[in-house]
Image (tube, rainbow, N blue to C red; front, side, top):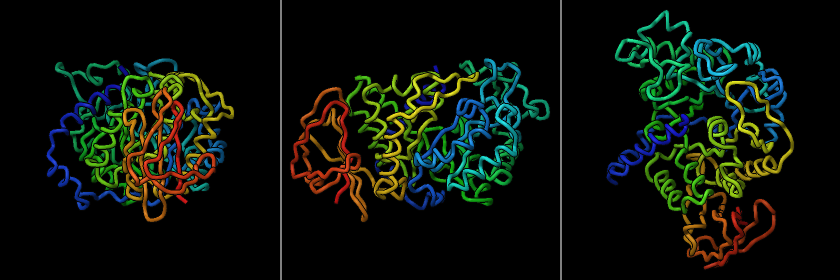
Length: 459
């Protein structure tokens, strides 16, 4: 069972508990005054690109990755997420090179990737192209041979026999869990995170297994980082309360699970409607949910984007960009990478031009050109346009004072003859992908081929 599946299972349990919350309580928790997170302005139309530095270039180094930044800028990327850059533990190491999530030194850079100077040069080069860089931060556990294990053994969790322990019930034998009930540990971890922002110019963090660390720690560290500069914080977790005082964005595991099951013919659109309902009615307005088609966990342990979504892939990619949320691309998707990248050894991506890359570039440009599609509080909410084939066809509008976007997705393997049941969609549009004009009349009948979608911009 992979880590992503584990956390999704936990998230489902959490959502199940949330279903008992009364409408009054839901409204109470959405009072805007409860939100203290100040989202940086540069997030409003931002896209995220995850770099697995080990596999990103033939050299597998930060220095080599700098040469790819102009290409990523052209693709439409704003935020670079670097997987952990720290030295990797050797004791109980997995595979040849070990997991980047087994941290030996929170203040160091792995020799495999380069030096501190190389990281600083990467950040400076990204900043020069108006891109931002976040680090993958692993707070919940360390490698067995991290020096703080000997220096501060009281900072670690112990089992019933008093021994250091990996996360219970899983095969994460290369790491041992920290104990965040210790105030000195929290100070140390905060100091380490501040170091990278202050000394390397890092613009924020993607926080691994964020829900396994007390939320109060993240709330405190957010305030401390803000004293240095505005930052972007992404939680690898799925939960409303992360967004009030700590995180700008959180994972949308439930979204990924829904579209995956739909693509595999295991579910209708009911699961997706449930996700959007919770996202609209339960999360605060500033919350940005991470819409991903693939990431390092999904690709390595479960499926490539092609295996996961098959013929539905392009529709799912488009939905990840134009629906509510902040879109992410994992390195190699744009090259049509067809392999599950190895996790504990070198396995460089085979770079090539590919239609998936062209699609992402076009979709990102559409997102940036239409403020209704912006992220979080800057964008417009999704409003459902009901139709005659609601189990197979998703249709919605995002509209603000500047523009109106109507999207319709056939999320099935069958041709659908769809009648729109709302007059809200009526109008004159331009197809954002083809550039052709289209008119939607009241009670419009639309024919959609299997997995076909339309993104229409009102003229």
